[in-house]
Length: 79
Image 1 (cartoon, rainbow, N blue to C red):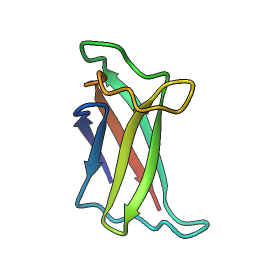
Image 2: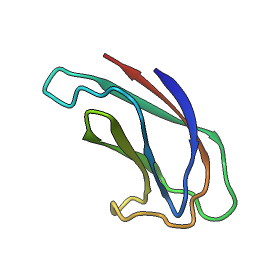
Image 3: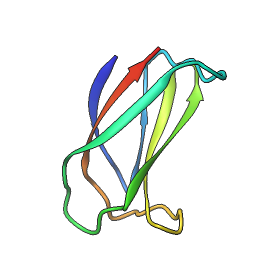
Image 4: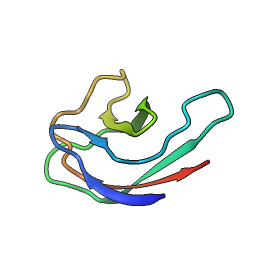
């Protein structure tokens, strides 16, 4: 599964997808596709929320959400 999503206030929930959040389950990869206006985060944090969604969040070096990041992010799930 692959796709692209635009962050809204530094975060986005990607759904519907199939995610195995158990140990040894799905691996989710993200990369910056198109930088948005405003301050960008230093990296992106990914959290599987349920078996059908995951969150992508732009964060700074302290781990705080960068709410000004509205970049376009590519993602891929390997199961």
